[in-house]
Length: 618
Image (tube, rainbow, N blue to C red):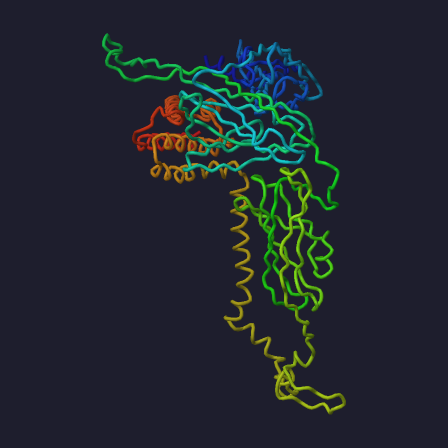
């Protein structure tokens, strides 16, 4: 028996060989093969034979919006022992994950994609996807509206998106094809809600928008609403049909009772009140508004027109108004105009001759601050001569969309008092105010700078003092303490930088404290619905920090695999799934409109403590 064991050990040490790595191969896989326009689904490229392939080029996918969601190694190894012969087999693998959103209906192809690794290459299999047209339902509607039906090139138009929600939902996503239209530039509109729980960050494509929750009525029916806006800035003329937006969500369609596996008796279903929601995917399209975009007229356009479109007024203020030549004056300009002012710039002051003739101005332009329907700019100017009597009227050329003509708004002139600059002489610096006539004899002064001079008799011989000075303990301490303090600070800085060099570890370490801070606001929420939203956002941010992932739009499915790989037990993972579902059910349409948020917060803290404990152990 012992001899056989020795043979096996010798076999492990000297006869172990590793099978050669498999040739490179790739395959494509999708979450589903039948979807609706605007309904996102998961697409994966699975690589075998390499755990470090190059990221493939997905630009060949034309009919879908593609969002890369990351990649991960997928390698495994196994050891077999047959008659003392040890064989170790290593399977190297990797997968790339994407979110695809179909842009139109039909039978669409995901073409073959080439993957390169270690000098080799392979291509995926093509996949066909059946894409259906989405349909509006009684419980869900999506509406697009524009701030105007016509505009000029360069004139901002506000696109408002309102989602009407008649049932509980979760895991929703929006698709706005207009954001890929090269006829526009785009900007965001900041949203503000009545409470912190009323504003949501909604992912759209590779970015996000701020959505506001509210209530609304459509076709005589009351709905919960989510509203957000985008700014469209036309760059070319024409009649543009805004393509329909699409929202995809998991909608609550019913409930099923949860059977208690410990009490499977006859009366269990009768007395049990535990129910879980049944959710189905719903895809809702919007309407398609039309926008007429016109070119600005060339006739009458001022030479210094800078693209201000709408109806504008301008006013100016200056402080101080009594200065000397070269003194700074703070000039404040207030432009009042259209609803959207983020892209509005101040008038080109360097192109106004009356201003540049009398004042020196910095080359940089000031950025403004928006205040209601106005944008305020501040600029420093300096008078060049004492004969300057005023800050002249500042002109703002603009195109008036009501009269369809170019006009000029002007400020009122601001009176100034400009004095001569007094030249500082040597006598001023010496402190003598009396006038000294030319040719008078030079004499010693008992005031001013001359008063500080002494003859050489006051100089003390300190030739031997330096040697004895360093024998003093006080002097030694003063001389040696700076290097010691420097080394101490250097060590502290090194320790701090070493501890915080990995941003992912820093996020993970601070995840629980950030969660605790977020949970404090739950006690002050006005309703159970807001509490659910705040707890859900806090848990998403916590898991994002813990797992080094974007946390704002995390779902349970995003983190389930990572938590399981990190050593978290299945019961904790299951409890976390239930918490996510409870919060999502309560967040929209009032599944838990009234109630006490304390048990929800307590459950969240309990789960995060278990994650902290098991994560450290893992």
